[in-house]
Every structure is written in structure tokens, then in C-alpha cells.
Length: 236
Image (cartoon, rainbow, N blue to C red):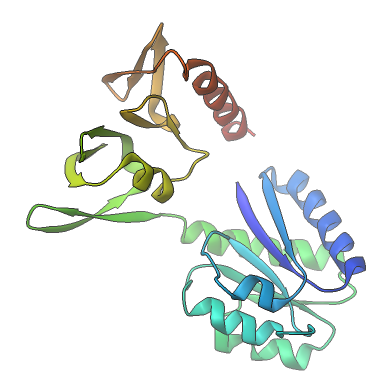
């Protein structure tokens, strides 16, 4: 899924851009989730780095797009920023905040789709995500895509990966916050499983990359639904 923030104070342009994004979703065969903000202040204050792409208007009432982008860059160096503006002389200043590009209003779909192609290309180059956990003697950086499942025993956390198992301290809630909720599913009190590595299901036993773990009776139906949705989305 591509998470896009649309920061625009003109409702007509919001409608136009949402329509463009829906058309682009069909074109690129990628699921897109759109969050709309009506001012730069709305996204920049208490910003959380959860977006892949930000489409940012330059001129807004309370906080302009350049100021908002600068504040966002203080906490998120990875998000792709594209300015949407009718004043290209301002958008050219986007290099100061590592903006990818800008699109002129009124927004032509062909030009917009070209910028989105570039954004996806940059985004995918940066897609390899990591988490850092504390282990005995130091810290280790784990590639999220190589985590098969997470196991909790009391306050001990075991990250079972393609490359081995790593022990740290923490709670399952901590792991859920750090990992993509659409790719990881908590199938019981003790296990958080990466749906990518589920190989088979036999009653309440799940085979996850040569390991067998249990899904609880209460969560089995939800687990099957999540797995079906994941497989369906991955196949698009």
C-alpha cells in the first residue's frame, strides 16, 4: 500500500487530485491510501513519519508548504515530497527540503502521472525498512522484510528472522507499533506473524518459514481474513 498525504486548502483541487490518484491507482496497480490535510500546520505539527508521499500545496493560510516541508524534514528524511502550485518560482526552492518535483495548477493528469512514476521509483529505492533492537552487548538493525515472526515469553521478545533469532526485552505492543499492521498479524497472545512467510495452515497450526506456531481459537477467523486480504493485495 502507498500512503499519501494530500495537503491542500482548496476543496476543488482536493477533489481533482483525489480523482487523479484514483485513476493512477488503477494505472499502477498499487493500492493507495489518501489522507487529506487542509493546511501545512495540520500535517507538520506533531508529524508522524507514516507517509510514503506528500503532495503539498505551497500557499496556505496558516503555514505555507515550504515551512511545513522543512518541519517535516526534521523528523522524516525519507518521505517523497511533491509540491502542487500555481507559482513555480516558489516550488523551485523545493531543493532546500529535498523535494522530488512540482506540478503546476491546474493539474494535468499526464504530467501528474509522470511525477507519480518518479515518486514511486524513489520510494521503492528507499523501501527497505529496518528496526533497531537492543540485544545483549549492543544493538542490531533488522531488515523488516526478513522477520518471519515475533514471539513473546514474559518480557523476553524473540525476533525470528531468515538470518537467525534475536532476543530483546519488550512487549508485543511495542513490536506491533514498529511493524506494518497490514503485513504482520497477531495470531495469539504470544505470536506476531509476517503474513509473507505463512506457508500452510493445519487446524490451529501455522507453518511459518519451516517453523510451526499456533493461532488462537479466538483469532483464527480474523487471521484467515487478514491472510486472504494480504494475498489478494499482493497479487494485484
